[in-house]
Every structure is written in structure tokens, then in C-alpha cells.
View 1 (cartoon, one colour):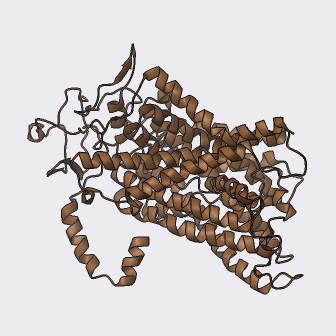
View 2 (spheres, helix red, strand yellow):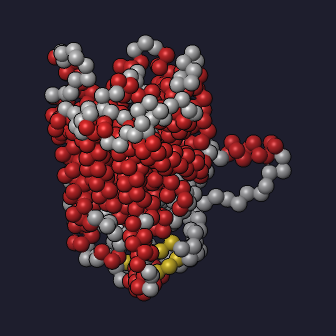
View 3 (tube, one colour):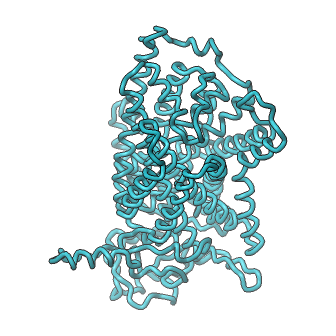
Length: 635
């Protein structure tokens, strides 16, 4: 190891840390301060390793009293030892990287940013089952259960299904690209850090804050959605009561650390998956058996009022709604830095996206379109974009008559919005912490306590949940419309950046002399899929510009210029937000696009003896039956 700026008392690292050069693997099973450093000295290095390593939990003795237990609990919130909030101590800067971009006394050190995110203090406690459920049910919430009602009204059943299938295909390609990147680089910040490393630090700054703001403002939206869902049973209760309850529940889950979040998401996702499967079975029964008043339904709503509404413009308007429904699929990539074994568990979790798109979205929405006509008045009866009374799923179940099923469906929606609110705190806090580690945000957000929790960032995210109390004021609908506007198209920028990062990474990987067999996980869609995802997400963004300029009216009243202008900014708010962040950072630091030659493809990389493992794996796969081969490709 090279470098003179070394911590004074480095601690022993965990067994299994691997130092890898192009054709050499040296395992350091017990690297400590008294080991000879000369045995690993090389003339040139492609990257470097900090001797501080990841912090480990101490095996403290069991508490002997309540006071001792309380003291340990308080101490768990202290900053983790050995990982500074800021500065470069403990990081040996990579050789071959470009000099920091500097304008006068201002400079951005990309090398230090890469090193810090690769040596995060976040706890790795997520198991494979947690990641599986985060991937399957991570984004199933108001986007599917509630917003799909507006999609059905605007485009009709055929346009809605085609839009969800198309955006689902783009999402599949995007998640495959993300899977290859996060399995290769299971680092803190994930895709926002990839934009800094593989594209441009200024674009990484914009993408990081774009993603953080998306979840920070989604948090109060989900809280008020949960409060409005409760009013399905009792409208006399104040929403503030349930905002308080839900906020305390989400705060308790996230303050329990990543393991608490994983267990909560496992439970929430299990409820959502069970409910959607149950709805599919119930929908088939209702469609064939018919409602108590009309009998057999079949496909009559596709004939009257018809298969489409508002023509091609209706289809384009549904694209944005369907894209919003998929927001959250990328959370499984953000969780890579906290997975106990990302190389083993992430590939399977990434592949689950196909099943979620095929079953949860397409099949369930097909049944919705068969059970609910697009001119159903209740689809527009919600008081806001997160009001579950406008859910086509609830409306479809209500067609079965006076049963307990609508209440069950609303209870599922309540669990879904709590899950998304929980994910909002997770996504925003981890992104804020990664931004701070890259010097893109105040250093205090990089505070990680001894339990591996980004404590300050989590508290900040929870504090913004207090905005949900504005539901008690009369103009809360307008406030939430503007908050929703920031979240609406943010995901498109994130997904397009992921695809572009994958394209540029593959190019840099090849120029460095590496082969695809050296990747721990390879995208099933390949670089072609990355191009499909990039172009597709950009086309969706362009279509929304057209819809914003020439919107679909949802009432008989003529659109006024003021109303059209307001609608334009509500639909396109994410665009100026991203541009402002990008241009501000670009003007301040004058950063440039990272060249292939100077791209860091080593810091935080997952190394394996791929040739030997691949040969053994290939030998075993030849003996598999055909059904198992197909299953392993898809799952």
C-alpha cells in the first residue's frame, strides 16, 4: 500500500478483504498494524485501500443494570469511531486520477469523493430476503393503487396498459444496468455517486439533490395519503391525529437502523404482494361471475365507453403517471451498500423486477380496466393526488356489492403508503449522507453513529414529515400539488442517468483491458438495453413537455392562460430544479465530463476470482434440468 498520510493507529480489518491487481490476487485475512507493509508494495497502483477499514461492532458485555443498558443505548448514537465526518484522513488517493478541478481557491476533489463513498460506515445488515421484498414491493404504493385511476381516465384501458408495458420495459432495462453497477460497486449513494464518478461531478451533484428532494417531499405526501385513507371509515376525525401516529411509526422504524427498515419492508411488501395476488383472483371472479346488479362483465367496458380516451395525447399523459408508479424500484440499488452479501443477493433481487412488472402492474391493471370504465365519476372524486377514495382498486372491489372487501383494500393501501413513507426516509437519508461524503452537502449529514445509521440525515428527513400537518389548512391541496410536482418527473432523470452511467462504465471497462467475464453480474439487457432505457426515459420526458404545453382538460370549463401556465410548471417543475443545481455547481467549480482514461473503476469494486468460479459454475449449470435454467435466468 502506498501513501504517507496514514492513520496513526489503524485497526485490524475483517477477514476476507481482497487486494487485487490485473492478474494477481492477494488475500489479507488479518491485516493489522504490526504486519509488514513492504510485502504489498508495488511500483504502480491502480487504486488504494485505507487501513482503517469498515467499522465493526464491538462485542460488549451484557448489561448488568437498567442504567448500563440506557448508557449503551445513548452511546449508540455517538459518531462511529475511525470514520471522520469530513476531510481526507485515512484515504490514500488513487494514482492515475485527474487533479482536482480548481477555480481560484475553490476545487472539487473527485478522488477523495470516490474514496469516501467506497469506505462508508453504514452497517451491512440487510439479508437476501430483505432485498427480495424491497425489489418486489418497494415502489408499490399510491402510484399504482391511486394514481392509476387518473391514468385510466386520461387514456382509457388500452392506452393505460400500453403505457405501463412500455415504461415497464424501460424500467427493466434500467434496473438491469443498475444491477450490474451496484453489484460491481456496492458503495454508499449508489446511482447518485455513479453520476459523479462516471459522468460529471456537477451532474452528480444535481442528480443527488434531485433524488433527495424527491423523497424528502414524498414523505409528507405519503403521510397525508395515509390520513385520508383512514377517513374512508371515519371522516369526522382530524387528519392531524393520524399524521402524528404514522410519523411516530416511521420514525421508530428508521431509528432502529437498517435491520429495522429491512424487517418493516419485508412485512409491508408481504402484505402488498398478498393483496395484489388476492385482488387478481378476486377480479377474475368478479369479471366472470358479474356484479350483483349487472351479471357477467367480460370486456364490455372496452366497448362502451371504449378502449381509448383522448387519443394519442391521452396515451402520452399516461406515460408520466406510469413512470411515477415505478418510482422506488431503484431503492434496491441504494440498499447495496448495506447488504451483508451484495454479490449473492442483489442479482436475484434485480431480476425480480421482471415479475413485478409482468404480474403486479400489467395483470392487476388489466383487471382494473375490465371492472372499471374510464368515465367512472369516482376516478376524479379524490380531493388530492394521494386520496385513496379515487383508487380504481377500491372502486373495482366495491362493484362486488356490500362486503368487507373495500375496507380490506383500503387497509392494504394504508400499509402501502406507510411502506412508501418508510422508504422515503431511507432513500433521502442515504442520499443525503452520500452527498455529504462527496462534499455535495453539509458535512454534518455524513454523521453515522455506532449502529451504522446516518443519524443526522434521518432526523432531517423525518423533520420534513411535519409538512403533512398542513393538511389541516384549507389550501393544502395546492400545497401538495406543488410538492407532488417536484416528485413527478424526478425519477426520469435518475433512470436516464443510470443508463448513461452503465454505457460509459462499459466503455471504460473495455478500454482498461477488462473482459465481461470479470464482472460479478452482467446485465441481461446489455449495453443495448442501457441505450433503450436512456432513449425511452428521454422520450417520456419530451412527451410530458408537450402535455404540459397542451394539457388534457378534466372538466367542461375552458382552460384559462393562467391555469395552463400553472399546469405547465406543475408538470415540469423537476426540470428547472435539476438545471439550477447542475448550473450552480458547474459555474462554481468548473468541473468537466470525466474522461474514460481518468474514470475510477476500482475504488469500492467487488473483486472475485471470476475465471475459477465461472468454470465451476458452468460445469454445474450443464447438469441442471431445463426448467431450472429458465428459472435461474428469470429469477
